[in-house]
Length: 218
Image (cartoon, rainbow, N blue to C red; front, side, top):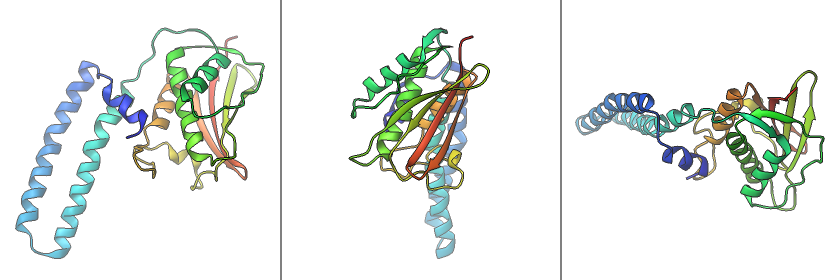
């Protein structure tokens, strides 16, 4: 299982979300039981195929619900001035996969929850590492935009995204990698939104690009 999914599973939910999840599991479990009964009673091959498909989708939903609630439960902790380059460097150190060239900057400060920002960067780096074959590098640089925006750019050395809409990769259980449930980018998107920012993606001939845009301190 991917580290992002395990992290969400281990984190306790707030009482209100825990109660909602419990209430949703009731009818879901009942539906699974009824499908099992129907499978024993139905002989028509087409109907049995449909029932197997329904069962498969119910199992996916059972796996998705706690992860979706886990993403929704992520909230801001203490907000303070944070040096953005220090966030990136901490995430690089935590990844411990291979050296990552980090552009010298200048890197501005942002107001944010440093723990969450490091977590978001770690997910972006993990995705970049997974996409980059041996012999090629993952690179991180900064773009200071007009006004009060700053963007951390993570460039991988892979084949890019296999969709015409790269932002469609932000989807629960969208990953095709064994053991990955596709929650990391949802976590990044949630953290970006909590900081008034956004995450976007694009494909270039030399690889995929992820951009985490935040508000810089004035």
